[in-house]
Amino acid sequence: MKDIKIVFMGTPDFAVPIFKALAENYNVVAVVTQPDKKQGRKQILTPSPIKKASALYNIPVLQPNKIRNEYEDILKYEPDMIVTCAYGQILPKELLEYPKYKCINVHASLLPKLRGGAPIHHAIMDGYDKTGITIMYMDIKMDAGDIISQDETTITKEDTLDSLHDRLSEMGKDLLLETLPNIISGNINPLKQDESEVTYGYNITKEDEKIDFTKTNIEVDNKVRALNPVPGAYTTLNGKRMKIYDVIVSDRYYANTEPGTIVGFEKNGIRVVTGKGEIILTDIAIEGKKRCLVKDYLNGIDKEDLLGVVLK
Image 1 (tube, one colour):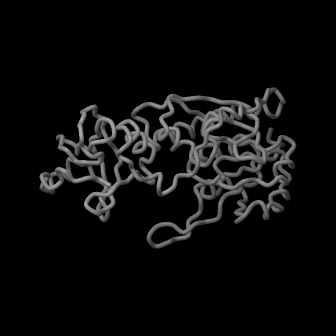
Image 2 (cartoon, helix red, strand yellow; image 1 turned 180 degrees about the horizontal axis):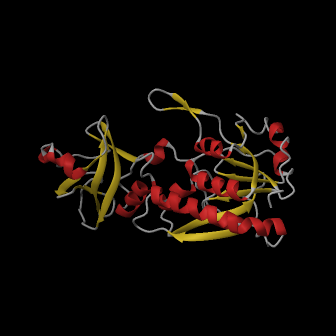
Image 3 (tube, rainbow, N blue to C red; image 1 turned 180 degrees about the vertical axis):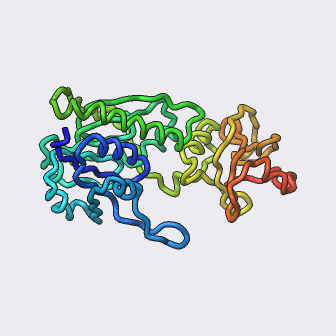
């Protein structure tokens, strides 16, 4: 299969194991990734994780600003197949129709559930009990192509964005290697997506990051886990932004108490009322300070000053 020329398109850490497996088993003739971006306080121009990984294999890298207008250089590599994974731009018709074996996408959900750019975040945030990987043909509409293969995993109550991200990335690698020979041989039966079952996992916004304590304790816990470690769910404490990375769900009930109110303390946490039940904050980062366990934070303050404070 080394005679089949593949162009890989991807950008973040999630795509790295998938790209490496492809590069080590197939003839990847070029990599397409997003342009370098300024990062950190010093705004240092930084290459994407996929660009860094491509250097290990001496594979040429293309970084179009807008691929819909800058696709000609990709076609010069005459790809027999294009494989994408979390690339970050919609491919134009000219690319979709070029390869002999078409354009294949590795998507981190069980399509048609959670189309969009943040399916892993939303799988946890929206309370899904399972998710997975879909290998699919690409078309003009976002994540709407025919399904080639899928693999699923249970979402546990301990899963965070970090743990589910890493598990799905490895699953994507394995499923792609299992599926590609069948695509090339034609031993597949693509399945059209059921449009009546479609849900979306759009990119996370600043509004999505804020905790709404009128939600149930389960919903708050889901949001915290879905945004741990980045970007982190947040609220405000006495006017300062406070990110929350871990909580414990508690079924204590408080009548006539405003959601978000701090009502007490545990050895390792701060008890906060929600729309149903309460949560216990155990891992936080207050604006201007480093992330810490709540038990350490409480050692340095007068806890009584926090009683009755409402997190906004």
